[in-house]
Structures are given as C-alpha cells and as structure tokens.
Image (cartoon, rainbow, N blue to C red; front, top):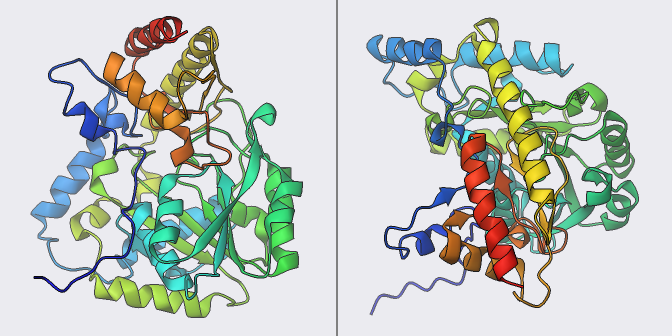
Length: 398
C-alpha cells in the first residue's frame, strides 16, 4: 500500500473542466466559447514574429537563459513600462515567466505563510487567482465590481473588505471575465487606499493593448507613484501567441519595500531554471516592430463585442453589459428554479447545444454567481449560430 496521502483539494478550472463532458457528446458539434485563445478562431501570430522565432532557433538559442529572463528582453520591457506606464523600474526589477500563471504561482507561494493570510481580489476574478491562493493554503476575499456601473469596482465595498490579514490588493484591468476597463479615478482611489493601509498592489494588465471602446486606460504604476506595485503582463494576447507561454512581472517599488519578495521569487525562478530561450529572443525589441495587427484585433473585437452585446440582450432570460476591452462578455442568466445554479445551467446547455460557457461562480461564488462567461473572439457567423441555439434553449427551458 502506498503511504502517500493527499489532503489538498483538486484545483478546479471552470474554463476547462467542462471539456470532460465534451468527450461524452459523441460527435455533436461544439462551440468552444470557453478559452481566451484567439488563435482557435480567425486570428494568427504576425508573420514577422514567426520569422523572429525561426531566426532565434536557427541561431542556436536552445540553451538555458538567465533564471530572471533574457537580459535584452528585460531591457525591452523596462523601456516599455517606464515609457507607457511611467513605472520606475530597472532590469533587476523584471522577471520573465512562463505566462502570467507562473507569475501568480510565484507570488502566492511566496506570500502565503499562514492560513490567515488573505488576498483581496475583484469579484469576479480570473479563476487562477482563487485556485492558487486556496492551493497554497491562504484565503481570499472579493470586493464588489458593480454590474450596473459597467463592472467598475465599488470602492466602499473594497475598503470594508480590508483587514489586518490582507497581504495584497489585486486589480485586473482590463478585466477578465467582465471585459470592463477601470476608470483612472477608481484605480487612483484603490491605490490611495493601498497606500493608507500599507498594502502592495498586484496589477494584472495582460489586456492593456486590447481596448476597443474609446475608453481611456492608465496602467496602475502610472498612478501609484511611490506606492509599491507588482505588475503582471505578457505577450500571449496582444501578439497572438498564447501557446508560446511568455509573460513577465515587474516590481514598481521606489522605496524597496518589496525587495525580500522579489529575491524570494527570483530564487523560485532559479529552481525552475528559465523560460523558453528562443521565444524570449524572438521578442527582444518587440515594441519597436510592426504593430498593425493590434489595430486589426481591436477592430474585430469592437465589432464582435457590439454583436454579442446586442444579440445576448435580445434573448429572454439573458442580460449583459457591453465589454470595453479584453476578449470577454459576462452575461447574467435568470435561473428561475429551472437550474439550481449557474454551473448546472452551463452543463445542461452544453449537453443540449454543444456550447461551452464557463460558469460564473467559478470566477467568484459571490459576484460571479448566476452568470457565465463567453469569449467574443469567434466570427460573427459563429456567434450568431451559437447564440441562436442559446435562444432556442432558453425558450424550450421555460
């Protein structure tokens, strides 16, 4: 008998767990509206970037890089963040990660020392935040984002949720799953509260190039000034390379209040050796290279967001706020006793229509319940077909 005993709970994923059911559908046409992967639809990695990767491979860049990341790429990121977001960072403040997910793992594994340690997240939030915190033995609380106000954070609620165990205040802007873009004045209020309470801010800005609703966006570091910010960003979304797994974190920390955390995370990076060297080489100097594809992405997303918003709100029992950025829309569904919760709704919908929507409570059991998330990446024709099936499903489920 093997002696090992596993006491941890399974790490759940509302984005991918439903795929187990897909395997049981035996040939039914499915609509993969669950994952924010543009390359699954009519988007593709820019040709110049493919060529840069080929070049990097041919130039024999198959070795381990520095654990913190290729120095030339870190210089590229420093130039970008200092210019775009008025950050105050050097190459020493940047760590290249294998996607933002690895960055989250580094952060929460480093910060959680006790089951009392608590992290304040927007509600709803990207599920990996919740799952990593739980896995490493910490706690989380969610502050309300107001659906009636375009999913903007509720500052009064955020302030109420802070306690003596709060170790970090997180901002996800533009937001996954709601598609909202936080107003600068609201980000400033969050940052000011963080300063008053002497709590660092974790700012997830992976979608900061994908804003399509004439909305003004400011990075958190440009507002924070001397308040410490851990920034998370990467290349998978705006450069259409989700499978290349390249992200980064940076420490905007003028007074070196996060120096211990930074060194601890670097020690974790050293133990996993490095991110993919050829991919890092392909991105050196990326921000001075062609950017036409970003304009094309945002034009497509703007049109598709408008279509999804209009079509979903025409379906009886469904309502949705129009997204302003990222890839997503987060509709509310009237369950009316037909389904006991949003997860059951999404499973029933999948089995009857083939549409894969992640259930909203997986993004937060408080502010995500009775919702589901849909990507707005598919062409309008595919969304029209899928949302037509959703409409028939809702009519037949009365």
